[in-house]
Image (cartoon, rainbow, N blue to C red; front, side):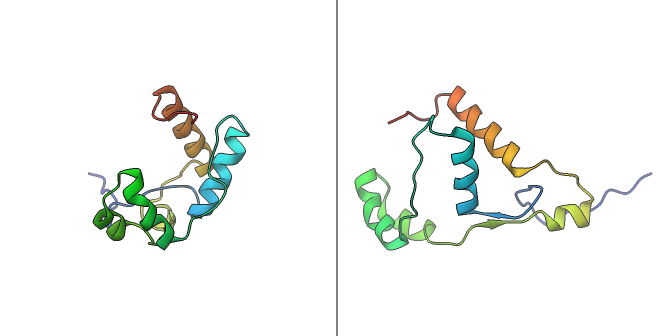
Length: 107
């Protein structure tokens, strides 16, 4: 019987590492003016202060905003031998799926 490689915890997977600003650049290139996307990164303290006006409870905002976000597929590729698709393709298809499902408005 063939042994399966053991995963050490659940983690997001993509073909290369990427960060939050990179996600924005990828989506901006994909939508190319068809959708209004944010152009700036709001400082965390300002975002926390704005949350109550957007209907987000302040305690939730304080617990969840301001953490650095970075993903890497190194452990999946090396430890499990996975071949992953490019993150650009994944993000573009996910964005298109959200548009099809009418998950947000053009506002």
